Image 1 (cartoon, rainbow, N blue to C red):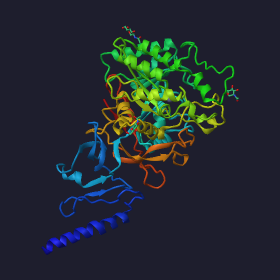
Image 2 (image 1 turned 60 degrees about the vertical axis):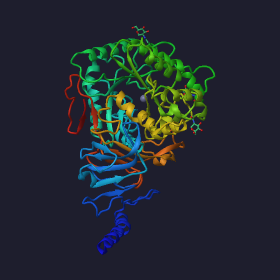
Image 3 (image 1 turned 30 degrees about the horizontal axis):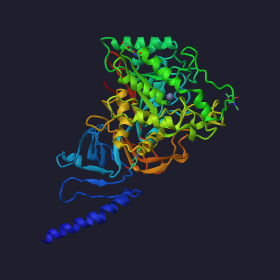
Image 4 (image 1 turned 60 degrees about the horizontal axis):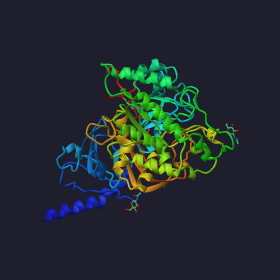
Amino acid sequence: MLEFQRIVFLQGLFTFVIVPAIAIFLGFVAPSNLVTVKLTHSFFHTANIIQLHRSPTYFPSPPYTLFSTRVVLPSRTIKPSYILITSEGKIHDLCPSLARTPSEWRKVVIDVSPLVVMPGLIDPHVHVNAPGREEWEGFEHATRAAAAGGTTTILDMPLNNVPSTIDAESLQKKIRAWAHSDSVVDVGLIGGIVHGNKESVGDLIDGGVLALKSFMIDSQSAHFPHVNAADLKDAVVELNRIFSNSNYVGREVPYILHAELDDFGPDTGSRATTQGTYDHTSYDDYEKSRPHSWETNAVELAANIANNTRVHIHIAHVSSHRAAQRIFELRSSNSFKGKITAETCTQYLVWGKEEIPPGSTSYKCAPPIRSVRNRDKLRSYLFRIDRESASLDFVASDHSPCPPELKQGENLTKAWGGISGLQYRLQGTWSVAKELNLTIIQLSDILSGRPASVFGIDGMKGVLKSGLDADLLIWDPESSVVLNPGNCLHRHKVSAFHGYKGQGEVYYTLLRGRPVYNRNSESLAVSNTHPSPGRLLMREKRDGTISQRLSTEFSQYS
Ligand SMILES: *[C@@H]1O[C@H](CO)[C@@H](O)[C@H](O)[C@H]1NC(C)=O
Ligand SMILES: *[C@@H]1O[C@H](CO)[C@@H](O)[C@H](O)[C@H]1NC(C)=O
Ligand SMILES: *[C@@H]1O[C@H](CO)[C@@H](O)[C@H](O)[C@H]1NC(C)=O
Ligand SMILES: [Zn+2]
């Protein structure tokens, strides 16, 4: 009896005095409103040491176990779960309790409840601008901003870097630029198909790109000439030939199109209608200069050329609800025999042009932001995602930053076209989703699961399941933050999103179980471990052999 009381006393002393004291001493207690220390298991009833604490200021190195009351599971439910993370940073398993797991998984348990744990976000449309224009962004800044926004994988576009990524040699330059920089999230590369480089398409695929991309209209970059109708046809024929080869291994590499085509046809280049009483500071005039018909023209031509082929067309940044409708029809029709997927971007879901003050160059992008009415319709095409034939698969940022000088002044014609929003994709999209009463599960789909499957990395990322990378976004969907330059990790602090009240706050972003962003550490620090934790995601060659190896580690997948 005496012995029992002594144990109870010791246990109480331990639980309520010693452990909190040690926790405070070690700096576990975070300046937050969350409970900081929680001991749910008695130290006296098990031989294993379990550190269960909330709001950790640091994470141990894997292996360890992560717990939350709210984990987004592959079964499309949110439930309390323990995520067992291996020393390689993979998910070993997810369990509702630790009762039946081997004792090694009970040694270190980090409890982040009530924060939501979901798959790290995947943003397949980012312009890193390296090599050649690191002063516009670069891998260090892009990947840190990504991490701060909960993103663990980005796909980098083949322009506006110099040279453009359009053949084996320029792809090597891109890979070297990546290898010499310090990326904190994973990066996949996209190759360019431009006027006159069709013989490089096979080399780009063998070089490991995850997708190919063309512009159907002037790209703003002299180094990235757009394709005319004949080029587009040649590209599709070439891709179809590659994919139809019996030695071709893996899924068809998606062919991304910047789908704007002016009313003068595919062979004339851009001819924005800025004549007459055109006001260079009016967003309304800017929007009218690149009308809906440009998007629907482009979708029609692309669908026509890719029809009856094995080419997977992916329409980038759909802004017009009419284009979304046309894609919906193509997908639902029995006569269209091709594969077509599509994305929209945060900015098209958040704003209507009526809300943009005159001369606001930070909102300039192409295609333009359209009316509020258009925005509301566009939202409905995105959130048909649970239906059989969805129209828009996911939301990308189309992060396309530039030096502040190129956004200076109020002339929308002169300003660089591109919105800086990589860090803000979660908050922008979640704000809209919340307004529409959508769930965190749907959000996870359109920011992570769907992009992973469209670009063929779903065997590696995009859901929380055994064998996949432990890339995790840990966040509070109930709080809101006014996005501001002070917390911005993009190289340049110009963004249409600054001043916007975004729903949701990122607490931690983990790449393969290691933190690459931690809100609780001083400032907006991200991991500075060496070598840097980000990896380059390379597709295997057409015949299934490995693309290439540098001294740096590569992730291969099949
Ligand atoms: C695709 O081809 C079929 C004939 O195989 C045709 O009926 C259909 O209209 C075509 N669709 C497009 C979008 O070109
Ligand atoms: C705006 O820029 C365009 C393109 O550089 C130029 O043609 C036009 O004159 C400018 N307008 C004003 C009002 O500055
Ligand atoms: C969302 O739910 C709230 C409360 O149930 C309701 O008032 C509102 O109309 C809903 N909004 C939409 C867009 O369905
Ligand atoms: Zn882009």
